[in-house]
Length: 182
Image 1 (cartoon, rainbow, N blue to C red):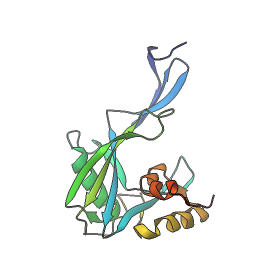
Image 2: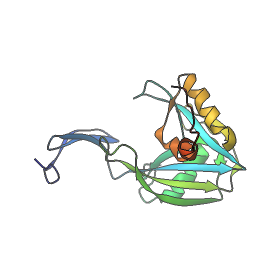
Image 3: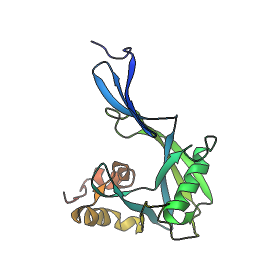
Image 4: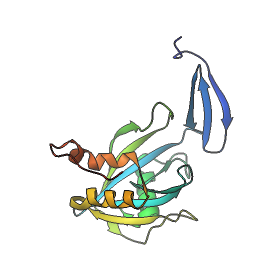
C-alpha cells in the first residue's frame, strides 16, 4: 500500500521535535517551523569545525558549525542566523554568507532539512564555545590536512557528522580514494 497520502499522526511532541507516523512510516520532524543552517566557514585555506557532545550519540561529534533558524527570532533570515551561530560557536564573524542550497541529511528517518551556507571574510572576535553548557571546542583545520584530522578524531572515538562529506567528498572520489580508519 502506498503511504504517500496517508494522514500524518503526531505520536509525541516536545519543544523542538515531534515523532510522527504516516501509514507504516515513523519519523521525526522539527516543531514550530524551525529549520537549520549549516556553515562551511573557510578562512585562508582552513576550515572552521566544531566538536561537541551529542546526547543521542553518547559521545562527542566533529561537525561543521550549525544552528537553528528562528529559535531566537521567528523573523530571522537563514543568513543572519548562520552569522550569529558561527560567532557564538566559533568566535568568528563572517563578512559574507552565501546560501549553497537546501539539503536533507537522513530523509528516511527525519523530515528536517538544512540550508548549507558558505561563510567568508572571517574575523576572529572571540573564543566561541557556544552558549550556556554547549561546551564547544573550535578547530581550525588546514584543508590540506582535513582527511588526516578526521581520521585522527575518529581514531580517538569522536563521531563524524555526515555533513563533513561536503569537504571530504573529492578525496573520497579520487582514483586513490581516502582511507579513513574505522
